[in-house]
Image (cartoon, rainbow, N blue to C red; front, side, top):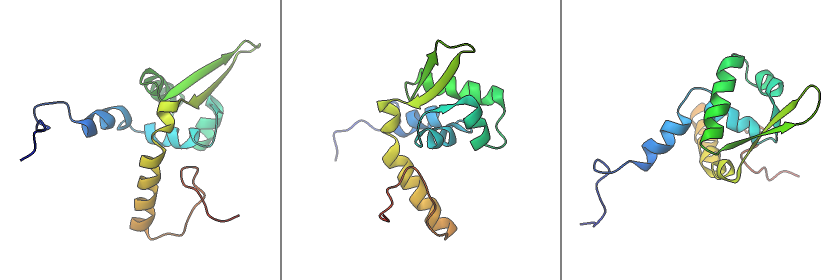
Amino acid sequence: MSNSTPCLDTPCPIQFVLDILGSKWSILILRELFLGDRRTHELLSALPGISTKTLTIRLRELEQHQLVVRHVYAEVPPRVVYGLTTKGRELQPVMAAMHQVGQQWLAQADCACPLVENDSP
């Protein structure tokens, strides 16, 4: 028998991550940020169906969990750009695995995903 504590007696690490990322749109926002820093209007364009209010809420949640950083530039009008933190980048292998499984389940050809390395030149 293992000396580890049963998951029912301690916080479950899987549940902890799901509580952070399980909100609708969170994973897709992170996917877009793997392409590079984005402004709010760029995220809205890349995520059809998300409202400005929901995007703002999700970005604040991701920022609170230190997965996303918000850069405000002192310009007129102010420019706000969102990017991934080091902690946010740690999700790359998890999201790449989700991409791979999704591709297999959908039985589709490779797509250009910022989370997976393409072997093509």
